[in-house]
Image (cartoon, rainbow, N blue to C red):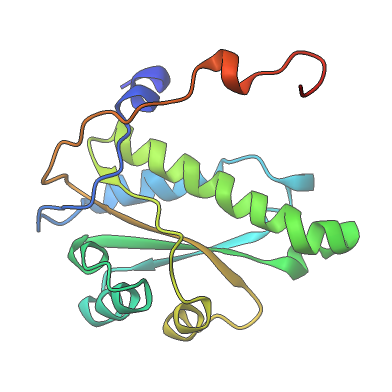
Length: 172
């Protein structure tokens, strides 16, 4: 699947088949995340891959009981690593690492789509609970990305017009 097809086909899927994801596909997803651009090429993020049923269930509970997280064959938790980007001062520690983690997560989602898999971005979660589940010490959970073979086909959601989001020279 080419890039533009992957972008056009990506949907937020919250129902997954129980079919395991092939290791080669997981590896390609992780390699794609690793290829994402980052501030100063510091890659100020960490990725936690979770397949364990108990851990996935705990993540679902820590995410406002979003049970589909537990149903996904694989879950990626993207974390910002402030120390990795602290050489840029507070802007690096507070912002660049978060940007790095979100860009990597986006690349992972597009790679999953290109491989015939689906995902959804989960940002609604208890940060302290998720940190405890994944044993995060010096990193901040930013996004939870459940991945699997889709068991639903959501319609494309409406998007804003390009003319509504693009401003030439300055904001109105």
